[in-house]
Amino acid sequence: MADSKVPAADNALRILSHLAAQRGPVPASSIATALDLPRSSVYHLLTVLTERGFALHLPEEKRYGLGIAAFELSTGFSRQEPLSRVGQPLLAGLVDRLGESGHLAVLHGRDVLYIAEERAPRRPRLVTDVGIRLPGHLTASGRALLATLPPAQLRALYPDSSAFVERNGHAPHSYSELKRILNQVREDGYATEDGEVTSDFASIAVSVRDHVGWPAAGIAITFPRGNVPPEKWPQLAAQIAEVAAELSRRIRGRVA
Image (cartoon, one colour):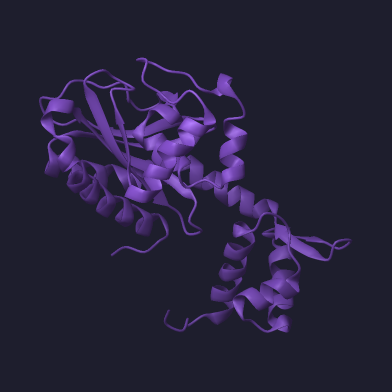
């Protein structure tokens, strides 16, 4: 990374990003070590961030976490719907190239929530309209996203068999079955579903990661199964992955 022309601002943002990536509040000394910054500079910047509400000081624990102002930024991010705004043109370009319908989805508990859709010409309407929620373990988008979660969080989402529902009789019915599917997703680099959401339709999806590697969204293409033979699915996945990587760069503020 090139040296910043405004090092104090750059370091303050690095501190905020570091705090956002932690499981909980952390000592100032660990921030200084992780970011290779002088402790005195870290303390000065944390003081300003705390005064502005972006950081929170826990004096009894001698630790710092994110403050309410950082939360307000995140809610502003949600209100502006940047994922769908940034993702829609990329999704439209992908659909134009492939000639099959596509959608963008985010995790919402165990479900995926569809936030953008592009229907290809002369293709039937799908069940993935904007605002629709579907069980994540059934969908390609959901599997792509679930495969990126830490094991403990995944287990918490699927504590027992009651967490598994099905639509067309083809679905994982246990945590062990789901783990096998997600292991394959990690190995392949993309997720699939074949008739588990809509009979005779298949989907391929890739996860979009944010700046800390968290699953921000899933991009998927859905098509009548006869249109794309399974041996060509990896080629389709590679094109989806390119768009997912570009969306990931854009939500991190890095346009290629």
